[in-house]
Figure 1 (cartoon, rainbow, N blue to C red):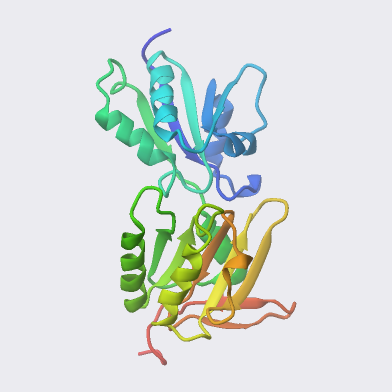
Figure 2: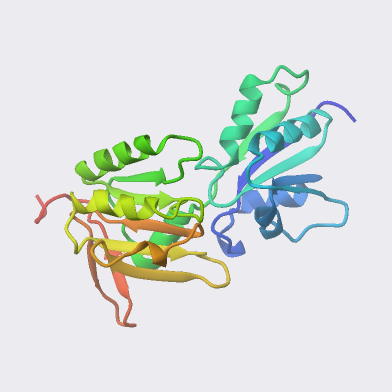
Length: 258
């Protein structure tokens, strides 16, 4: 079989099948080959016995992208899976880069589509209300692919611009100090009462959501499976009837509506 293959790069959403886009589920059901990071391939099931799974480690994104094009160029129906949205710190970038850099015959003829998904930041925000209701910035705190000096500079600029911030890859065993440093930078620009949302494994077993403040949050509350949302000067929090908290950032700016 050669030519006419299809490659779908899909976002699984936060992990709850009910929050997966129908188009993503349809692509998974039609796939002959499913490629991705091991936990995300597991999350993408159930699969049929005739579907081949290619699960791999987290640091081989370009290898996965090239394998996907190779199989699709042979005429296979291929799906590359990411959690959340594939275009946000995920596999769509590697796939497009592989296509841009590659000169292999047949790759350009592959029917390529990117199917979006609900991000971790969106899922966590929805659990507490609407903290992303105004301008916001999404950042990865990992310095695996960019220098930490750039991370700090972007933190300073985003905080000085009074943007709500959502942190991906906030902390790991290899870099346990960086989240604390990020909090230090933000505390120069924002009051201690600024609402902070910690959302871990939203939509999955063991989900945990914490609403705290910039003055009280500490790195020990966070791991790599947590998304951290830090409000702007305009973000508000107030009690819910169930004892938890609502958090929102008004779409208007200032102390009163204009």
